[in-house]
Image (cartoon, rainbow over all chains, first blue to last red; front, side, top):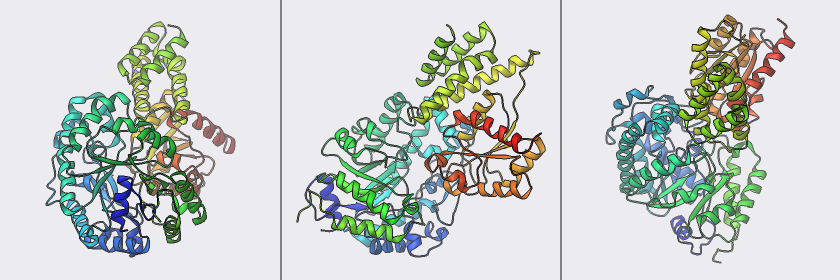
Length: 343
Length: 224
């Protein structure tokens, strides 16, 4: 089976030759190709080279467009800075005072350098892997992007205390997100994934989520021309999956490493695609043997779950993670035989 | 309402995100005494309880934020009240607070500042993107025995090592205690030691207790 067939099998719950597997190795491609991050996150061809190296050496069933969310905020005017071993990050948010949100304008996605880089990278990846490996387009949630344009505090303040202003912000975010997502689909990505922080009851009041967040996401996702995978952000989401199941175009959920997989399956229902839950960013901090042990437990736990993709949770796998850890996990997944596997 | 009823009502109002209702409860309590008493009798114990619930992951960021806002509203009223009050309570010591170089995530720092001030500490907030030298300069200038450094991410938390080095180079080890905090420290508790911190706290609500400990340690190691 190709990776695409394997992932589709997980989506449909049909038999596969082995468990579909992925790790968030967006950053890791730079390490494998010894590419300085100032080039890796600005030149699509460099990013492609990195992901080809990831595909060859780590063999995940899903590849990712650049996991560099601050580039989206940069398009709105936030300042970013580059790091030696991590993706770019926000230096200064564009809006410092909530009174200035009127200054927030929709960027030109055909001209902004960072956005063009994201879209071109998606295009190159899709061309390179031509339907054999699913390409996941990584975008910032329209509910979270304001936080990196104006800072968490300002966005929280608006969400909690000024619904009119919040709606005005979301209107801009909606146009931006739908444009970027649909452009990525035009370029050949298979699905969009986004981390959802300002949608989690561990972050916001449930009433804010029910009254404002879910209706906003519902309207936005309905305009997207393809499937969306809902990523846990940095918090467990199993308990709140029912809040999001009604959202249009949702293809699956990436779970947090702290989520109980059995409970998550019960809550999500039998036919919902679940992904996760090996913590990615800290893999380099544990021994390859311990990483394998954790991976094996997850595989055992989901042994008979046909709608499950083994994946890393949280953010990118860190730069310092030994390649041995990653390839070891691949070898384990490749040889592990779950109950849904077709021999 | 007695103290217990007031605490319960305030806790409930904060949990439900009812800032105005919470402020009203504090106004009612202060009407029987004053805002400083309302802070000590009602707000501080409620913040302690919220901190305890936060550690059990029963509190959302929004609830913590509302708690900070209500405490901030109350602090403002105390400042206004104290301008006309001869019996201003003695403040605890000074603490220099800021986000480390390259870090611009100020929400946690601002909440901690509020919780420390609520507990009587004098906070000298020097903002975002602060260099190690600027932290130590300000502490020396103001006589602060605690520097509180906040960082949200691992990449910026590593810059805190420079503050440790700056304290040590200037022979201020022990006298100036280095408190560290931010989201990344919750995810990676071992980071406190890695960056040379003298202490951290699981959440902002418990920052006053940490500062009591660090202040005592500083006095013990380098007496006044």
